[in-house]
Length: 312
Image 1 (tube, rainbow, N blue to C red):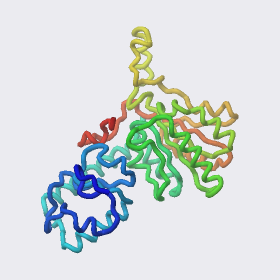
Image 2: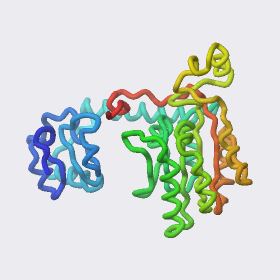
Image 3: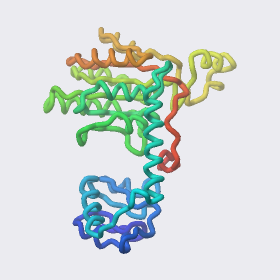
Image 4: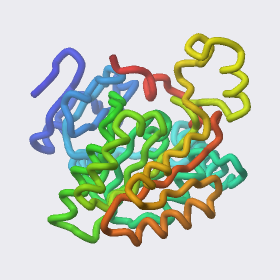
């Protein structure tokens, strides 16, 4: 299938499609502001920006073909080439920036620290379900699934309310096919609010899903307890409360008490690690870990708007 208006090639059937493409001109790459977008789902191609080359393929297959083609043409970039040096320098800057944020354990915590210490504890073969705004976006870069088809999230459209449903479906699969595999459901506090009572379904079916709520008192950002009280005291709450803010320091973990179990309220790295270790021992019911972070915590600044802009 070829989208002649926007792409050189669309669906990989053989290596010849890449080899014969006019994207390559001798040893040069031509007419490619963005060289290629590779995605399994055809509907995602051109979703953010129009791609010079859009490839519907498994990433491993596509990169193998691309590597073989470049190798056959003896195409290479010298390590001292300005483009390569700039690329590696920016990659290192990004790496160091994320590392600094993930190692900052001061309270209140930030997203990167929380995700780094969750990643350190959870099983390497677990299924990760993720939902939220910054929670899902940042989590995708730090909470890494090591096996294919072991991540379920809202994708590029950011649909809310699907996280716990995904987790239930994954847990039911594991119950019949991989009873020792764990399902980790990481939710923003707003995202959890859309379908939080599905926790009853998890108790009813005895599904050992570990629900982790990243609680920043809002959507993208919220307010600390004192600021929130001052805002609401300044006038009619329906008029003065920003629509993106949620009630500060909500104790979602208390939901567990309705079912005779205990949830965990965490504010430090040590709290998180202890709560996760205890939750991993539970095999007959869900667990809920409510992690308070800095209400103003944000993601690392994005250089390209199309990474985060609305797709609608």
